[in-house]
View: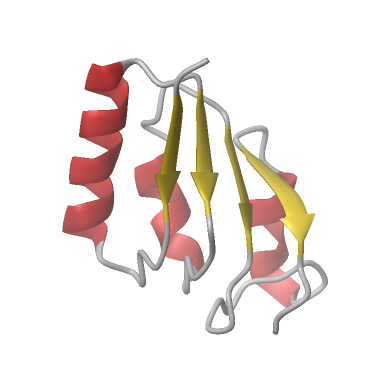
Length: 87
């Protein structure tokens, strides 16, 4: 299984789009995000990924289950919540 790993994307949409392009070109079967998505709008860029994404929230991620309009991101089919605890 080919797995991609990314972390600390911090709302950098250009970098996220480029990373997704590279991961798709490489044919990964799973992407692991090690934290700090930061804002909900980054989810749109990850939707272009051709593999499932699993990840954890980092210490600066501002969208978590139960926080109003932002909670939908953890309910999408592409994102699977692993751990919402921060350290």
